[in-house]
Length: 77
Image 1 (cartoon, rainbow, N blue to C red):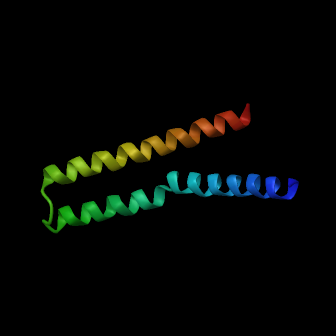
Image 2 (cartoon, rainbow, N blue to C red; image 1 turned 135 degrees about the vertical axis):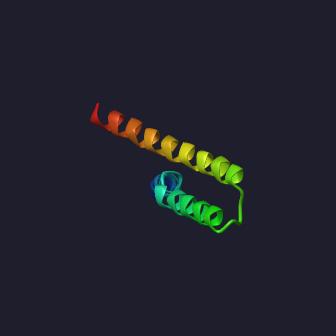
């Protein structure tokens, strides 16, 4: 029974690590930002749409950075 419990705890920790990496992956947002910029520069979206989408992406990036900063502060304490 303890082996199953240990395995479930290990599995839960691994899933949490994977989820945290996905949530805090800035590279995907940077790629999205580049894509939106390219769409705008090739006249596939309007300036208004570009600005709106850029703002959303930048807010998400800022949120990730704040989350990472908060975690780093908690780890130091």
